[in-house]
Image (cartoon, rainbow, N blue to C red; front, side, top):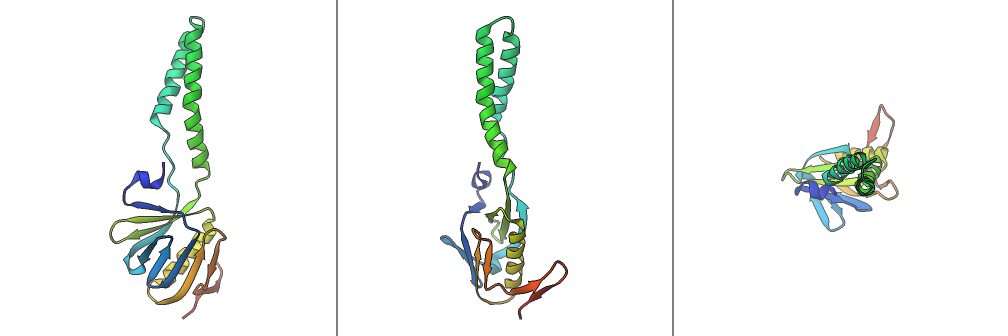
Length: 168
């Protein structure tokens, strides 16, 4: 299940680049006015829920298998088959949830949310810092390359965990 299926106001964005220029963040076929962002945060990608039908199939499979042992080989075969059919989607969801990664979430004043996927949490923190520095000042042009974890023309020129220098 994608983020879009969970909430109609959530837009999952898979874009290699994000461009910040003046008061606009542009990507793919969209743009957002920076002043329309009410909140920006980093969060793990929400875990996908396990399909209820698969859990039901597992339970029925266990019951049929246990009831069929010693009584009916057909019940055992059907029970094992249901166990396998129920286990496959559960395993797929488990694998997907295991490698979720992080998202940069931009909440707009309209209530709409944009999720930008990235598997590098440190890079997402850098992107968040750059966006934070762009909120109250006009920026020439900044490019965020999600696929290579590179920020071009960043207003943040250096720093460490204690101090960060910002260009005036």
